[in-house]
Length: 247
Image: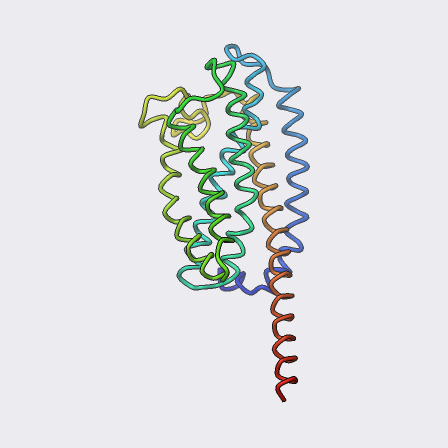
């Protein structure tokens, strides 16, 4: 399957169909989810209207974690098989992933202020999420920090794989340490503990966030592939010109 998609021409053809589908899912799920979240769902009996931040905060956090995991998978394929499309995929996912991690931190602060009385605490979940944001930024800086692209890609891919250890820390921090965050209320072995009037819009917003992430990633991958093709054509044209001059 990977070999099939790793062909740039074949990938571009598939992406040209998949990208508008992703945008459509984002628009449909996002509009429906927002409508249910801010009109159809009730206020929380403890948190009041503040609970509506959840519909942005939680899907952003889930997708930021998902995005980093997908980047790490791409980095593994790049380091093992040296395929440039895997590197392009990781690079394309870095920006939307970092944006979602930042949204998670900002909305978490807005949610934490009325609930905890402060914008920030060095809570295990908050701290590990901040580390995830820095890993995203570190990857972007490292990938573009070398004169040779392959060196930057290799170093940045290693950083991604090392950083994977932070993902289970984020997920299980509320169980491993005494934190201000509540435990899981959706992904539970005994089923979700929140009412369907809140669960449905939350899942719709999560679908919208992932669709947005996929759409932006595909758009950036197509742009990067086009840019690299143009660079290859330009370099070949320069080599031919030099060869003609030497002749």
